[in-house]
Amino acid sequence: MDGQARYRRWYRRLLGLYPRPYRERFADSMEQAFTDLWRERAGTEGSGHRAFILWIFAETFAGIIRERATDLARLTMARNATNVFRIVKYLALATGGLLVAGIATVMVLARGTGEDITGVVAPALLLTLLSAVAAVVAAILQGTSDRRSS
Image 1 (tube, rainbow, N blue to C red):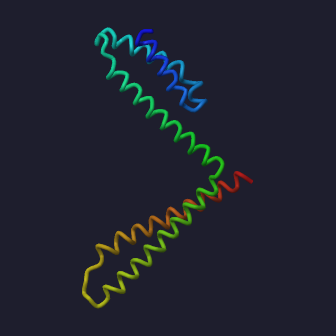
Image 2: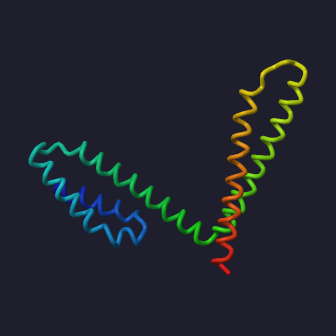
């Protein structure tokens, strides 16, 4: 068996790791592109295909991870969108609450010392505001998700 047939078989197996819809749509064209690139490299590099194989397999594996993550996120959002938004909302509210408590603590500790605490308080206030915005957005998305699922 020549090198091309062996690597093509390995590449076909690697393509089998893609999610089914992606694999059904793109596997044949990806295999054809692999073969075309192999032939193109054969004309320029002779028999040294190790760098090409390493590159194409790494690139394909990164694509598989990306597609699997996208597929997982899509499934999670479709099934548990309300729960995800609820968790985000409460985490944002908790973060904002902790920041407010931290700001109040710094202000109490710095009272009467003459220390300039604006370098600490200003960024903390900004993060508190961003936490509040994240909580509001998550609450709106949670409500929208609840209405869709009902």
